[in-house]
Image 1 (tube, rainbow, N blue to C red):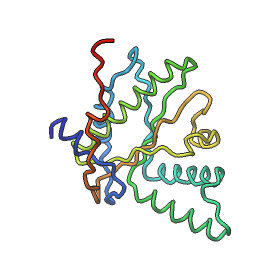
Image 2: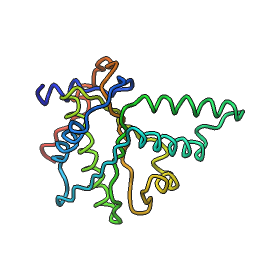
Image 3: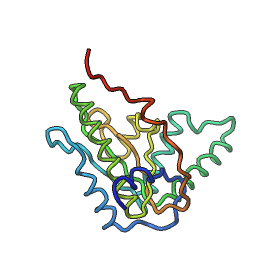
Length: 193
């Protein structure tokens, strides 16, 4: 698969097979992703992959955060417990969860540079994974702004920033291609003023 094919054909995967991706392949994917542009060669990305019992640990902390933030509240405790169980089961069906985080920068320009670099790292990981038949879903959710969630998983919300959680596995179903807006509608050439 060439680069252009990977860029055009990669899909965000929502349903995964019940099969783990080998550790060696996950390592290869994230190792290849490190060739993203990185300002001053800071390589600000950090990755924690949760699987097996680690996945159970992460999902429990996610559910705690959802409850704290009001995302799981319903009109009855019974419905809340049922919703928690259903969401937990859905997340357990995903073979791997990779939490991508970076050190925070006080300087807003440096912060944006580092955030952009980590985002490029994530996109590289998705493209490399696709080459090997591995799907990912790049998620950004409210728990990424919950200081207690950070504490529970061993991070510090004052000094670290979660950029994404990638859901990873072999695709069970690949969504159909959705056409993009023609770039001519969004592209402007400024040749002289």
